[in-house]
Length: 147
Image (tube, rainbow, N blue to C red; front, side, top):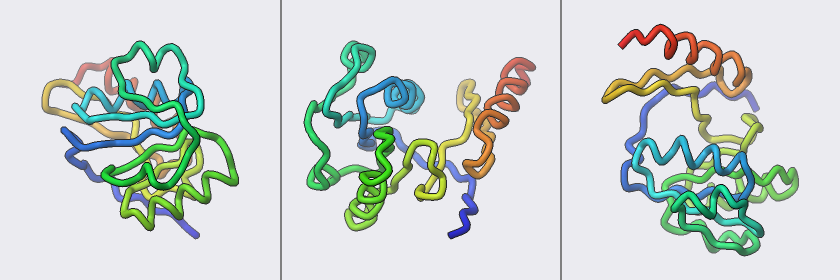
């Protein structure tokens, strides 16, 4: 199925966001989301030290769809092809927006490369296809300090 993501902004302040996976990809996502005052929680079999020391609520347990209740969205950083497809199905059934790390074909949304200063945000998105080019362009904007 073709994907064509609409670049929109969603108010995630004080919204619960679930991250599945406890590695560095999950930790990097936490750092981004906390800049927007989201309430981030992690669910993973094992959690890396960076997450443990990041003042993020985490649960060291196996994935189960029962944990999806009450979240606005989730990011899966599990890199498990079979489980990723099940997570998409479970999230859709629970009414939770889902992003599967590095798999835009499975995502309901993608996160752009973001430059934020004060109340101004600039988002650069490639429809989930060329993340590094989005980051490069975002960095050009950031280095010019246009705001």
